[in-house]
Each structure stands twice: as structure tokens, then as C-alpha cells.
Image (cartoon, rainbow over all chains, first blue to last red; front, top):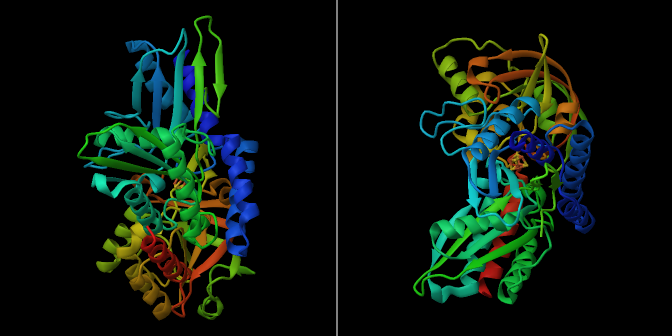
Length: 284
Length: 194
Ligand code: SF4
């Protein structure tokens, strides 16, 4: 059951985009005035349509698999996820991307030590919830962690993000979604930044300060002029999401995770009676 | 505008930054490891198993699927060209390649090599892998399969592959430098008020 669910999660995630991301890309196309920028977005939208129609991955970089699982951990669950990843790699098919970090030897099935990345958390109900995100390297490689001086505050965060996004240029395949993890510790901030990327585009943080930071950053980054694929234009980001955690009085960790326009994700809930529900926009 | 490979030097020298073209003809995919192997052979005076004279290098690691004894391209978008920065100028010089297709642009030494040897850099939309796969008319041959699916050199015959933006031309023009200059000015302006 878990294996089957994982195969379908990976197939759906890599071949279709969530409606909120699609809508944001359509809005971006409407915003652009320059022909080159428009052509990039038109090509992206046409490509998404073709991928969905042919049920093939929209991008050749089908990423490395990340899973957020809420449920009771047992060996069967973890084995099911691993089997699902190997099967999806053959059947979808996905590009085998997972290598040994030093020898660079490719394992061929997207499995390895610590791969897929699986985050377990306690059950939310009588179901197992699996959230999947395939993460491409182009955008992941442009991500950053900054340990700011607390006195730098929100402006310091803005400076750091502005610097990262403008230096990244076209490399993370903009327009991107920017996930920020603010506070916590180094690993907590990095975790939150990636969770932020999973939030549907346009949904604001419930924390008013974080929501203001999201709005300010979206305006600034889109004013920067990087544009689609770094070829210039008005839409550099589709959205900015901020996740907060309280932190030490002497630190201000900020993790910045970038997600390309191919902001792929899919969630599933497996119920005890065998029903499985799939959602690309996630569950509340 | 349509261009066809093999490309003549005069045709390449006519292209200017900002133009949009589509390409018909053969391209060779090549990423980091293929570039490294090309240089290893060429520096020893060995021939390559494929001819790049007038040809096109595509920075791409595709997803391929084998059906019987035929290969089919599933997805073939561009990869980040900057990873090949340190090797590209020499590859251009030694092979006589006339166009590089990729994403994100390349360094100043590559821009200089383009001008010197008559070659252009064409930007293809990052991630637009299915559209690219659709313009592959034939998988001609696979070279260096030992490098693995993504790093191998795939010789592909394309029809009207594009839109490709002339992002670095052979007259020193670079769309990336133009955009970067504007972005840097805008960033400095915003940083001053923060
Ligand atoms: S950054 Fe995203 S869209 Fe671009 S090549 Fe990588 S996975 Fe594909």
C-alpha cells in the first residue's frame, strides 16, 4: 500500500503542477511586458501542458526525493517508501540522480544512505500522511544559511535574501518560490525554509510580522529585474513564504531555500480502511 | 528566425544578442564529464568519436528510455552552463563547435572565446524538457555510455528546437551582462534605503 502510494505520489508530482503554482505562472505571464520574458513563461506553460498530456516528467531533473511522513513509524513504512522510490524511478521514468558524495558513483535507483530524505513526525489522526517533494539541484544549489546579528532584524533578512536572489540570477530557473526559515537553530531554520517552499503560493503566514516580510520581499525581489530565467523582466519570484521559530536571544538564523518554477509536490493520506486520498495543494 | 546545423561561421557572426531563433539539425549533449573527457582526448592528440566542426553542444542530461533497441527521449531540458565554464573555451577552440545551448549563461573567458572563434551561446528555457524532447526527431547515436544516462553524449537530430534566445553573441554582446548591470544598480538602490 505504501509502495503503491509512493509511486503514484512521485508520478503525479513530477508530471503535473499544483494549481496555485500554475495560476502564479499565468499571472507572471500577464505581468511581463518584454518579449523575451514572455517567451520564457509561454515556453514553461506549454511545457507543463505537454508533460501533463503525455504523463511524462515536466523537467529532466526529477530531483532527489524528500518525504514528510506523519504516522506511526515501523519498518514496513520505511521499506515501502524505499521500494516505491526505486519503482517510480523505473516506471515513470525518473532520472537516477543519487550519487555517493565523494566517489560520485550513481546508485541507479535514487536510493542511498539517507536518501530518500524522510522526516517522520507523530500521527495527525488515524491515517498516515505522506507529503512528497522532488527537489532539483538547480534551485537547491542556490540556497543559503546566514547567521545574522539579531540587531540586523527584518532589514538584515531582506538584505540577505536580496543578495542571494540577485547573485543566483538565472541559475535556479526563475521565477522561483523563496522559502525562508527564520529563527530556531541552524538545522531548524533549514528545515523550516524547505517546509515554507511547500506552502501553496500566495497563502500568507499567520504571523503578521512574517506576513509583512513576505509581502515586502515579493515586491523587492520582483523589482530587482532578474526576470524569468535571469534574462530580465518583472517576475523573479512567484512568492515568498516565511516560517518562524523562536530562537536564542543572541542569534538570528535565516535559511533561504529556493524552489524553481517546477515547484513540484504531492500529498497523500492512507486511511485504515485502505482508502488513499491524493492532493497536490496539500491538506489543511 | 530559423538556423540549421552544421552552422557556417558567417551565419553565426550575423546573430545578435536578443534575437530569438529555432534550430534544425544535429546537436550533441554534453555536461561536465563529457567536456572533461573531450579535453583529455584532444590534448593527447586523439580524435573524438563524433565530429563537432560546425556543430552544436547542448548542455543537457536527458531522461532516455529504451524501447526494444531504440532509444526514446523522455525529457531533455538544459542544465546550468556555468559548471562547464572552466572547460568551454578550450572545447570551442579545439573542436570548432559553432553554438552552445544551455541555461544561465557563461563566464567572460567563454564570451571572449565566442568572439575569437565564431560561436554563439543560445539560452533555452530551464526546465522546458518535454517541449525539447518533442523537437527531437531522431536519436542518432549514444557516445560514452559508460558515463551514465545524464553525462553521456547523445547525438540528437532536432527539428525547430526553440525558442532559443541569442544570449551571448560573437561581438562581445551578453544579455546576462546587460541584465546583471541593471540588477546590480537596482539592488544597490534598494540596499541604500534598507
Ligand atoms: S532548477 Fe528546476 S526547472 Fe530548472 S532544471 Fe532544475 S529542476 Fe528543472
